[in-house]
Amino acid sequence: MIFLLFVVSLFAAAQAQAPGLAGTYQLSLPGGIVTLRLEVKGTALTGALEAQGQTAATLSGTVSGDKASGRAVSSGGEGSFAIALSGDVLRLTLSQEDGPQQRAGSLPMEFRRAGAAAAAPPPVVPPASPSAGDVAGDPRLVGDWSYQDVIVSGSASMASEERISFRADGTFVYAKGRSVAGGTDWSYDGGPGGSAERGRWRAQNGVLFVARSSGDWVRVGTYGMTEDGRTMRVIYDQGGRKLWSRR
Image 1 (cartoon, rainbow, N blue to C red):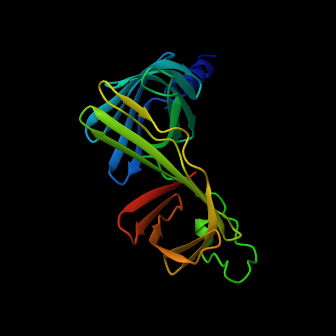
Image 2 (cartoon, rainbow, N blue to C red; image 1 turned 180 degrees about the vertical axis):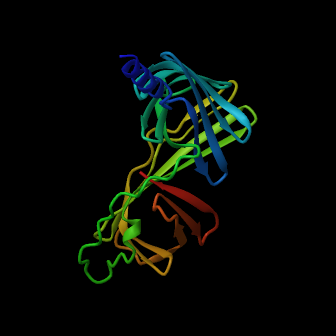
Image 3 (cartoon, rainbow, N blue to C red; image 1 turned 120 degrees about the vertical axis):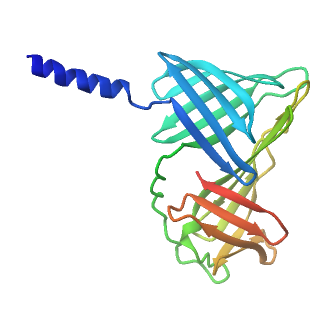
């Protein structure tokens, strides 16, 4: 009986030490890395969202399994947050309510636990037999992608999101997500984003081309992808580069 009690106590200790929500998470952006630090004591959660060496917001709330919610506070005001953890991927959604100088809105961000091995990419559906002029060329691009940008300057911060879906039939859908910003005594919410833009896409020898609606093919720029297929870097011919994450 003593032996069994000892083994059971080890199982209980291992369960108690499971990482859960507590830990450090990171989001890689072209301008640097955004870090989310979370601490859990019982059902109470506290945390800090950091960018460019500064604390952009502090979090305090309640944990329920692999989810948490509560209040987020920054120098520009207060809002709410919701967290959902799936494996080593954590989705943080910041929200604000209607107010005298702001509109209701939310900003989703996807972090990965620091030091965790990258997850295997989801299976990619190879392109169907497209018609002439619609040849996609690189099945690795097929899927849903998002680009998130967070800028912090002094007491002001701004966050925006873009999304694009490359389909196996050689078509794409692009849309801008919500953009929000705020400072010590001001805030801005750009709304849910613009309308979706559709067209055709193709890729050849690491070069991406698109054709909007019935327009001609236009070269976008060069691209590269990590071995796990989760992150894609696009260097645009018109200048600049972006890191896109698979959703």
